[in-house]
Image (tube, rainbow, N blue to C red; front, side):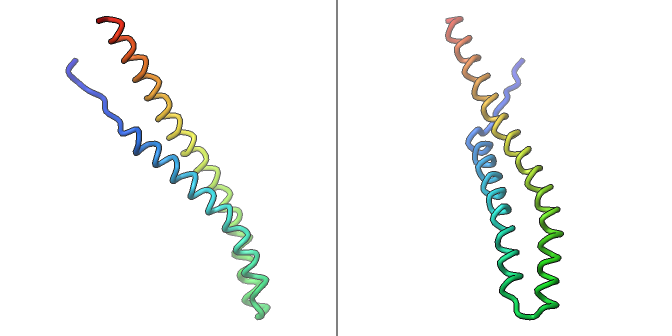
Length: 96
């Protein structure tokens, strides 16, 4: 019974924030690849960049979905631990 559970909620929330930031940056990357292909005067290189951009869109979309799941999970962990901690604190206070 002497075991303790500790969780750094600030670190969990910071992780959730960073995951959201990474996701937004990945969304912005789509426009950057399309713009870059349009700026390249060499047809072969422009086509290669465009092809890479399309392939990357597929991989990026899958990555964004996973990041969304991780973001929701970390946010949920922080919220759940905060709620449980509040209920435990209230129960302890009620026992006094």
